[in-house]
Amino acid sequence: MPVPKSNLYPDFNIVRLSHVEFMVTDLAASKAFYADTLGLQISYEDSETVFLRALEERNHHCIILRKGQKAEANVLGFKVYDEQELDKAEIYFKEKGLPSEWIERPHQGRTLRTQDLHGIPLEFYARMNQLDPIHQQYKLYKGVRPLRIDHFNCFSTNVDESVAFYNDLGFRVTEYTEDEESKKLWAAWMHRKGGVHDMAFTNGRGPRLHHTAFWVPNPLAIIDLLDLMSTTGYLENIERGPGRHGISNAFFLYIRDPDGHRIEIYCSDYMTVDPDLEPIKWDLKDPQRQTLWGAPAPRSWFEEGTTFANTEISDSQLAAQPIVAP
Ligand SMILES: [Fe+2]
Image (tube, rainbow, N blue to C red; front, side, top):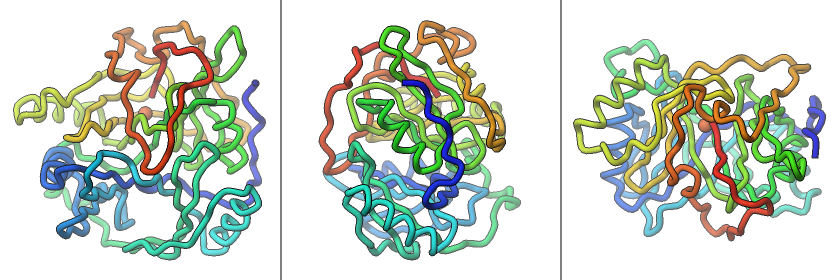
């Protein structure tokens, strides 16, 4: 199917992606990875959880690590414009026939829990506890100097369906690849906040979370992280890169946390706020779409991902090909 026309006036106003909650099997090991090595800042911790934020963020958290038996993702979080938009969101998901409920979440205001059409657990809120700015406290900058959460990328068994669903929510497609034979979408990148994406979908066994990305100041921060990881026991956690993507034009590195959750370190994509911005189509056979410099990705990167808690997964409806990008 062709990319749908952007819905510039969705039923409720999503500002941006906000946070992810990971189940981790060794909380201390995960804390060491995210706080000591990557440089995210701890905003709250107890014996079961660690809440972290990046250096530009005033919101209380962009990632929650929760101790558990199985490494999976509990939820993807999104921020809406205000409380009124949150009420509109409840009406929207109920009309769609999707399960939705109000839940209590620490450090967040009213939170609506629901799911997308394929079962990805989602939560929406308008207000999160606000913390003091730390972006000019340079003594805190360490690791890869993460500034903010940037995007999620998920495996989808039917990318056309995922794109139609998120398009209706007001996410706008910036770049995509299409299967030449079937004319079905193979992958698509969609945004709310004015970058290349808040959410991306790639054909594959799903739904699963392929990666969560953090924005960093520049490529040198990524080189510094590689030096740090390769000399502090994290050599095996470096999966792909560094490099520059064709799609998104961003500089990237993919790493795996101690449980295998994939994190992308990402910078230098471009602004997409124009409502009439035309999406860029890429040829599925063009190797530069993944890495502008041509280096291939390892097999693990095409096949492995994080399952969502209590969510069934199934095979893709399109034949498997090794295709994923930013
Ligand atoms: Fe990405």
